[in-house]
Length: 427
Ligand code: SF4
Image (cartoon, rainbow, N blue to C red):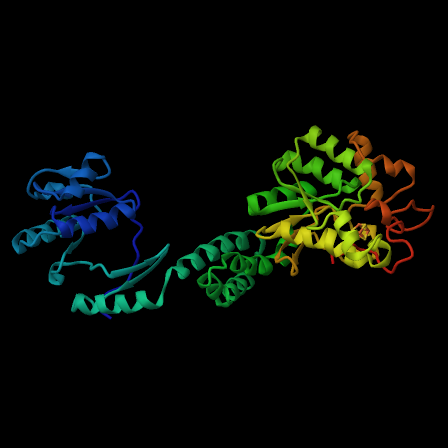
């Protein structure tokens, strides 16, 4: 191989282009994109070059080339078709240790520029070592037909993933394996099919086990979630005690985070009153979601009190389906779940991949005890559902919730007499 391929970082470096015709313009366009400090040396310039000079994007020496034009330059590109001038430029450049390229005259070049295919930040250079630019153009065309814009998007996603991976995966080999797994996954195909969010979900799923290890406090988890997922982040809450604690933290980090409230039509009036109180207190961005059937329509279609005959179906229609709709297109879901609230939650992780909804589930309060929750509420004088003072421990829909008898598990008042511990949204 005759040439050593290299991609130069020209940002902020002086580059001189001698000539003001179409070829010079093409070179200047590329150099401006690379954020080089460009000076064009030529008495005549194309209209685009003239505009760019007027806009102070590039500088202009309005005269024929003289050796002093190269003072302070890192590179010079000679885009004149006058061989004598090009020889003079090359000699002056070499005297000053400046790299020189004369367009279409490889014998007057210290470096040559490849034909370039660009897909976002992905750059593919094709060079025939200056021997057949038309062959390089053909190869470029063939690559362009194979490598579409989806590669640029894959690069964007994998670059963002790499930034996150560097923060959470200290081991180089592990990090490289995770990044490789993403790049080799079906992500490219998904982007090509236009389901970008599914490609992004692959990255999230791969990073989740490592993210989980970095979460140390509620504040840290919320800050990370807000910075990482931005408007793709939502919280769900029915304003239970732990939910209020989480909201009290959230409003200090990302106060406009949407809080999804599933209005089943069967909540206690005390829950609805508390919701309005909290909305006013924190100026919450509460999104209320409902089943497509009202309580009356459900009774007409399935008979009265479906909750007592088939609570799974009732929960599915009134909770699970509306939530699935609300989470569609979101990247991360914040909950106030605690490990010690139920055996079904004992294995809860601070950050999990949720396969059902295809997003990251974040449980910053996973290791909080019930006592710690109430201690926080008392110390911070937070409002809470008055039903807690009336013997209720876990508050859901009125027909499916009863008071807890001393010594019982805190969720024992839900779906009493049924082999059911969860409504289904957290399964
Ligand atoms: S908790 Fe009861 S009333 Fe509420 S949706 Fe589930 S079964 Fe229906």
